[in-house]
Length: 124
Image (cartoon, rainbow, N blue to C red; front, side, top):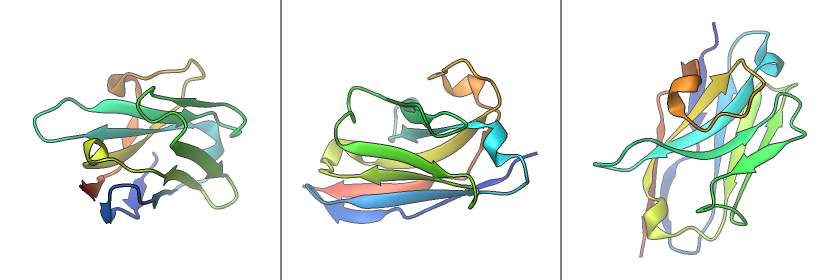
C-alpha cells in the first residue's frame, strides 16, 4: 500500500510559478512510476506528467511541455511538479498517483494509488 499526500497548491497570478510536492509513505516508493494529473470543474481528470521509477525518464502533456518539470527524490519518497509560466487554464485540482507498471500510462485508471489533491488557482 502507498499513501500519497500532495502539498504546495495555492493562488498565483498568470505568469507565476508554483512547486507541488507529493510525499509517499512506505518503503517501496522507488518501485512506482509517479504521475501528476489535474481536474478542472466540469472536466475529466487529465494527464499532466509522469516520471519513471528511477527518475531518468519523464513525459508531459503537450499543454504543459516546456513550462512544467517533474522530478523525484527517492531518498525522500517525494515527487515534485515545478510549474512555471502558469496560465488561467492551468487552474485545477492537481493529484499525484502511483503506477506499479513499467509501461508508460497516461490514463488515470492505470494508476493504483492516488493522493487527495491540491488546488491550484491561476488568476488572470
